[in-house]
Length: 142
Ligand code: FES
Image (cartoon, rainbow, N blue to C red):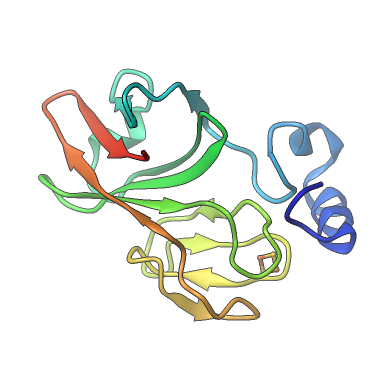
């Protein structure tokens, strides 16, 4: 339990169950998949993550131990954000819509730019460069 408090961990467990917790690095939301980065870049193919082929789709992935939210924001744009809540380190989840990112531990919300919309988190989620290709989104993590 590296970044999150014991309380956050227990609250998350009560909400989503112990099985789902095993999929998350630090309490909070389960992740959608794992990617091994190559030369500091993570390639999320639309075949593996079909949600990213549609504008408004998003996933939470573990990229070599770095948890990211990746969102398809338009036909030619995407964003990569840290999926580690800036409050106490729970894994955030992607909900879509006008308030696309939320933290299941204490309810913080973030927009697609990573800005905290409601607390207790106050700091933004870290941003990572992301580019849309013909069959994938590539996020630079290194
Ligand atoms: S860890 Fe507290 S709101 Fe996310």
